Amino acid sequence: MKILLVSTDDVKGGAAIATWRLHQGLLNKGINSELFVMRKASDDKSVINSVSKTDRGEFFYRSLMPAIDRLPLKMFYKNRDRSIFWSSNWFPNSAVKELNLRRGDLVHLNWIGCGFLDISSLNKINTPLVWTLHDMWPFTGGCHDSVDCIKYMNLCGSCPLLRSNIPWDLSRWIYNRKSGAYKKLKDLTIVSPSKWLASCSKNSSLLKDFPIEVIPHGINQHLYKPVGKEIARKILNVPMDRKIILFGAIRATKNKRKGYSLLLSALRELSGQLKDTELFVFGSYGSGEILNIDFKVNYMGFLDDLSLVILYSAADVMVVPSLQEAWGNTVMESLSCGTPVIAFNTGGIPDMVDHQKNGYLARPFEVSDLACGIEWLLNSNEETRRSLSINARQKVEENFTLDLQVKRYVSLYRKLLDKA
Image (cartoon, rainbow, N blue to C red):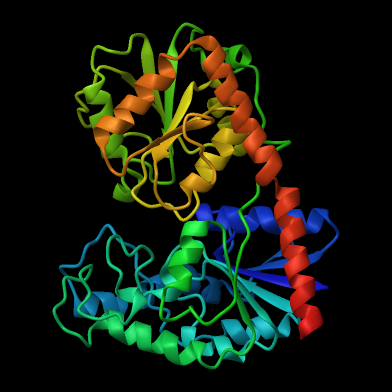
């Protein structure tokens, strides 16, 4: 059994990291897996760069393809909501042809935005297809996050994210291209990491007729595991009597959807209530702006896995104030390191966080309740905090290990190949 995983990137971005982890898990279980990407950042030989044949081709895909993919967006609407990422995947290319030449038994699509695969060419893939949802893009008119818009349930057009009043706008064009392409697909199975995203997909007009499975992302619990807090604090040079609040994501302070501003508002509400507390932020080097909060802020930049394990283990709590998360790798990583998570009760996060058992689920998107959760956890007694930590680790060990994820996917692959 040869599996071809497809992803725009191999190790950059949350979706790419989730795909990379699955790829490594399959290889470790003896499954013949290749990761087929548009932009390769790793030196792993099992990662195949679709344009590695020439430097000119690689430059085109790395630099020009994303810009070409954005051309319809720039041409039609300059006043769109720029906090929302879009992909059009309209430009014809040879990626599907190259993918077929890899001769896999099954193709497993993941995040394919920035124009990697021309959406109209998906029916030319000559194997059964699995498509794991990492966001909402596969069933929308181009946005990766629909915010409060539910037009994907019927028909996109007059898109509020594009600030458009035109029914036949860019979102309708992309929607129709997807609709035409999906009608030609005979053997596609959708996989969602979370119950919430599966529900969105099942309620969408584009994907409602395809079978859908829920398979949570997995993590290497042997790598992401608790390190003694005293040891972790010593490495970070933070005294044991300090309380550490942790926040982080890719582009942590710049991506509005990650909710950094909401966290700062919650911390301002806690002014004077929490003593000897520091905020650590990874995924950002800081902007130099005045935050107007009482807490010392430490910007840690971008960290590797081992450094993240130390940081998670040193923290008393991880706060994930995202406005929408299909899953949330940082939630799973933190729990695996025994650090409870405070987040809004939205998206895929409730699949991992059990209220007041391994964290705190605040009412979306109430800053006061987020602050209440932070205050509750940091001021809890030692026994409660120890119980939260044990429950956090146990949640991952029982539900979200990489071994479990691989086992679930291999079972799905075999079922589909037997059927084919």
